[in-house]
Amino acid sequence: MKSQLLIIFWLGLSLIPAGAAAGAADISGTWTFTVNKVMSPGTVDVTFVIKQDGEKLSGAYSGPTGEYPITGTVKGDKVVISYEVTNKSTMTVRLTGTIESPTKMSGAIEYIGGGAPSSKWIGTKKK
Image (cartoon, rainbow, N blue to C red; front, side, top):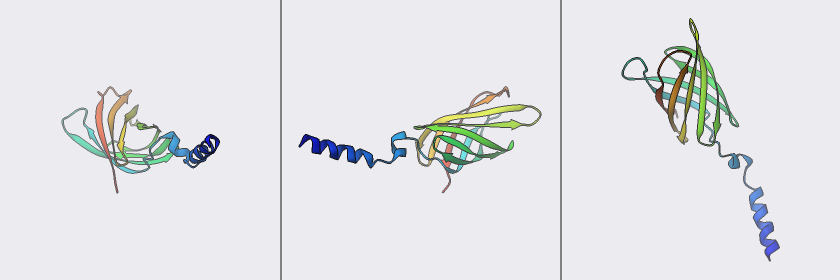
């Protein structure tokens, strides 16, 4: 009897999809991020088109500073998105955050090499 239960248990485990064990949410799609401005009061909305392949992210940022390709990762409910702004000099923008639901995430922005203070963001997935 114990061996039959053990066999049933192992068969049940084999039916769980491989991606379910990883726990990474799929955030592919078009997102609007509301970002706190760093040099003046208020917020600005920017767009991220995110493509996810496992834990790797790619896609594009579009906002007041232009359009740039993005890279990043998703591990569990944590997300990291980066892109480089290239005007007169190069600045890396890194967003780190938490996926709160399939349609909402939020976190902080770090401006590396640009001298701007950090900021906060909230992302909402477009339907």
